[in-house]
Length: 423
Image (tube, one colour):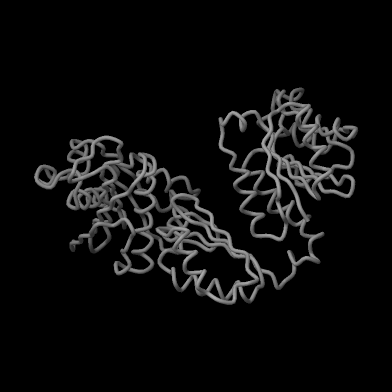
């Protein structure tokens, strides 16, 4: 059973927003028996939408579209669909009531009314009317029209579209109980490391394996015979135990938050080169107020002295980029906040500021614990954003490894050294 993905929107064509829906859909389908053979992005132009839908319906068993279901003038997907296949549009009263009751549409009733019109034969995917998206069986094919909002697209694709497609694929094994889909998130591990290890393993002929970099993490997906997937999963978990962040597709900031919350621990941060990115990652998780106490952005030497209490002697003799400064920053944040742990970052994100002794990409990360303070010297590569992101994720991973496994597992690909001292 083969299908196509169609993404509609001028903003996608112009590159004004990143098409994360295409990335998500590609990953989801790569681990199933459903074959996506074409992915298209087209503008909000009626004739192009009509022409594309007609062609895709002739060539594929199912079509999934994203975008053009909203209330604005450029949201014309439903109108184009009706013209493409001569389908009449009918207002859905329950849907209209749900739209009118939404706070975001108060005072805009006439403009948003168009969203309640569906083509004949359409079936709403969300029975609670929380989001607009519908399924349309047509000419023995399956058409799905999903919103462009990533959260809504992802929910409907996984919870509604896949189960519907799964029903007709049961005889091919997509939904049989002896099939299993497993996914893993790793940090400080690249695709080559995983591929090299898995390539040497036997008894994996009936497993589909997918590698997906989601910088700076890596996602691995396994799909196939249940017994083989379980066996391969166990071997991977044993080999890359320290690098394994999650088996639930949760990123480092989510996992670290859960670890802190479940243990009743608190965290504070002191940032220089990451400029608040580390704190932003932590607080991007709902409920982070339960474990994140506070964060400091001390960019200048003066702020490090005045706010965190870094000694002038340390800054003068050891320098801003040093083990000692990273340690004192972490200790300063811990002392002020009284948190259980504190993380610090100081370094050169570039593209300027590097020296022979401390080239661009030099970063020192500090970790203050109840009994000790550690500092780690790294050299990351890439542009400014890459270095800042790598430093922030590495800081979170240092804390994860310390709480779960202890200091014996402080080994990183980009590490240059580590120092510690008792408190």
